[in-house]
Length: 338
Image 1: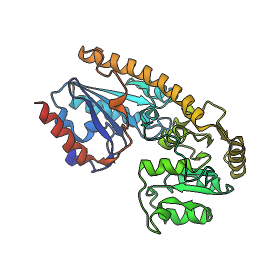
Image 2: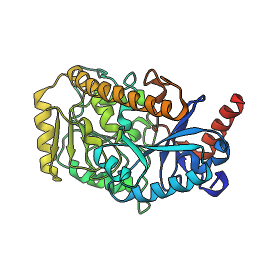
Image 3: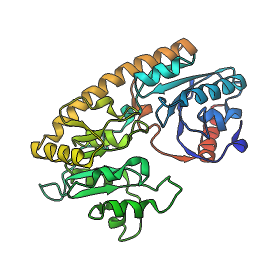
Image 4: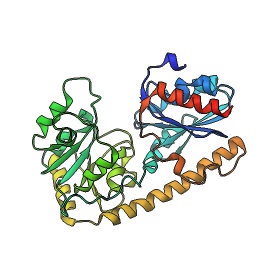
């Protein structure tokens, strides 16, 4: 293990507290123990608590290779503790059954609601019937949106390695509005959170169509912006907050998806009421999360109330950078402590 021995993958990680030392980072195949996979030298000899979040569901066997990686990291860093943040109870059961520390803490609660909020469009009536924020990958199942009129697509670069993924989606959805290219006047342009929130304000329903992934941050972005949601059944934990009548879970069928979109559009739901209801659910989870994490820190370091608010966690796991960039930032932070 060490920076030179792992790919310079894009991941997310940060120091939450310098004293006591607490970190949070994403887990993937390249960095199966998060920050400790590429920066073990920075934590050697330092008592530390590492919170981990897997960007994919743990219900398909990933718990095994992650726990094995944590055990290897633990042998190299005996003064470090590792705790997995699971997206739902099934993931927590899967992970804890392998003897590692874990508790339910959906990364969706770390969304910044100050950015993701209802924003009125340029006119009173939304321009788009539905919006789908997703990469143009096959696993996102864009074909299920084929019957929707006035469809808005917001997307990043594809991870699929075979063929032109965006061309495939254009063939599936020839009448959709491809926002990144429309805003970029024909060339792909990254759209920042403020721009995406504005576009969500011009849409009536948010779509979640994959069968399996992680907790899907876009699902919470929809909800905090006050959009009702149409989703298919899924693994990964995005449905944790799909508890109100503003969320419809339907079969894997384009007609069923389109029917649910039309039904929710016709209800003309109050966006602020959706946001407020979801906000209450998130506030409850945040309260319990802080109780748990502060209890862990106190039991590990003997220091109480290290995290009086959720603010250090806001945005955690959402901004991806090269491991080498994160390494240098952490190195600088830990050097400043000495």
